[in-house]
Image (cartoon, rainbow, N blue to C red; front, side, top):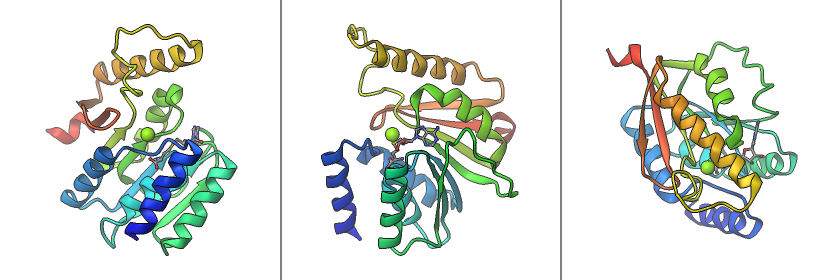
Length: 199
Ligand code: SAH
Ligand code: MG
């Protein structure tokens, strides 16, 4: 298993697949363990790296992960099979904004890690599937150090992403329904909890 994780890390590096940073996955795995998390929803599977690690925390953990890119979806399926985790990880090949979560499953942890420009939409769509006491974690809030930095950004595309992440951060800070903490871990993480669950 350990070797296979290293293999996935190599693959991601070679093929430029943006997988989660070490400190961030460690943070998530600790949370899962400490809070007995059982049901996880992930938006943005890529090759299954974070799904597989989260699912490996305990026997009880189940992950549903959504990926819209066909090649990555296929790679993710392959990796999940290799780890014998087909029963623990359900990989859905669809745009997360079009997915119909019809079953009544609620999630203890929702991990948002897909298109950075759509974060508010993901949050607004999937917050209804949060179990009582559950959290929404979002990755890449620093976006490789560009968010919150004063250095000028040449690329228009990159500027657009950074500005959308900044909007998302404000959206979380101003949110009446959720209380959010920001962590300077990895590429920047947020943890949002429903305010009524805090009472
Ligand atoms: N969570 C993974 C990395 C995900 S990278 C890990 O840490 O190992 C982000 C992925 O989100 C990309 O593979 C991209 O194709 C996918 N993605 C982006 N927008 C999406 C959307 N709207 N629906 C589903 N997947 C999306
Ligand atoms: Mg990420």
